[in-house]
Image (cartoon, rainbow, N blue to C red; front, side, top):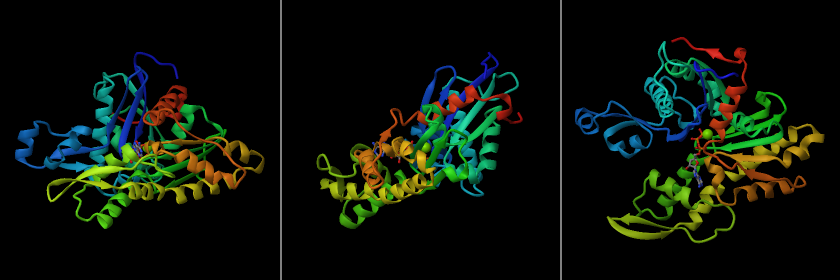
Length: 343
Ligand SMILES: Nc1ncnc2c1ncn2[C@@H]1O[C@H](COP(=O)(O)OP(=O)(O)OP(=O)(O)O)[C@@H](O)[C@H]1O
Ligand SMILES: [Mg+2]
């Protein structure tokens, strides 16, 4: 696609926990996928804004009706507030790259939006209406496909994008992936957080924890396989700061996603034409925030050993791999690939 003064291209990765944007003017930004509206008059007076997006929303959550609109990879059925929240996230991302809100005079915005595969299948209509107020033309694609496109891993590759809400799989065979080439599992970052919270409550019921604390610990000390060093956290017990060794719980929670992820990977590999299976086995690409778990690529390679071995690598830039891929797609797309949205 030729870029003109009147046309702007962006790739957006609309994620359950984080959303990122890569724009044709070189700007790249990432925000937490949270939106909150002040709960009452007092909150409105304290916050002095009608809506907060991203980290700011999370930090002020006690005063807000806080939404994470893509929980489990879907915009919740019938929830208008969640559709509005998706639109606020999109508006915020667009404002971060320095573009004005949609109007007749603004440059035309072409957006490729990578969404969790489930949302792609089931929330297309709601996503489109959220996008209507933001972009002029759109293309919705599944997240792992956007990642594959950005890396030019278009032939004999298996992308496994493990985010917060879902793990999305996509086999690339040199053409646009079909339904059979893709899979989605609910085993990802959020399910690890829930598992770790459950284990904490079972083993250390006296510790006062929240899902937000649990997620922070996981992002610092996650691992599968052998731990490099003990994981010790400080948590209040009846208000008194107390240390807990949670190495075992951390390992168990992180490992909980391995069996379903490996099983799905092996199943997809078995469906590849026999003469190409080895090529794909040697080109397993792990993306998404959860792919940062220490030891994950080794564990995946171990699962491939039974099939004769293989190679799994983690993408260099998991935060922007999806939005960069979206931008690359936006630049390459021809006019007929776009879906026009009304003003
Ligand atoms: N170092 C880390 N170790 C383990 N998990 C991590 C690490 N850093 C981030 N995460 C987790 O990665 C997830 C976020 O990844 P990502 O941004 O790819 O998800 P998303 O795109 O928002 O979700 P989805 O693709 O499911 O919609 C969160 O669950 C976060 O806790
Ligand atoms: Mg994602």
